[in-house]
Image (cartoon, each protein chain N blue to C red):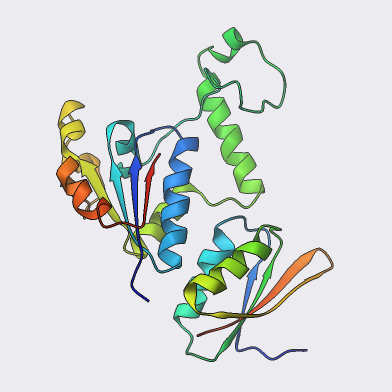
Length: 76
Length: 155
């Protein structure tokens, strides 16, 4: 189990809400801290990659498990 | 990294067409863009204090219908409200944000909303009809920002 500092359950939410909620959560975190996100929107997989690339945050993990998508984003 | 800029012109005032400007603006803001939405003609509906936009299948053969329905029946009184209600329910069940929520997120992210003064006057709107804190301006106001934007969309 990977360590994280904060968790966000975006299950059931559709584009662009998982990204917007994640951004909001990251705003209140400090650099180097890790946000764990759970989502059910399949579009979130590509979206979190793109989000990380454009915002300077690092997507350290992206995996599917039991129909849910798990992401770890390290604040840059 | 210099801040990128997104300029949007919103010209449509139906429930479904109100989504793209708000979705793109809120997402761009989350990605670090500075965003302005210039609302003109029917796009002014996006700025009403209480949004009450409707969706219609009339003239929109691409809209998936739950049951096939002749066009004349779609035009019956009450059908538009019913379709709007059904669309809202469907969106809620799919976890799609409401327009109110997306607009609030845009405002929170400091997306600048501008009402086209000429069309405000044309339709006899008053500033009381619109959100507090929005700006009013004309085409030149739009170009001041759009001219420096990285992305410019007409919706």
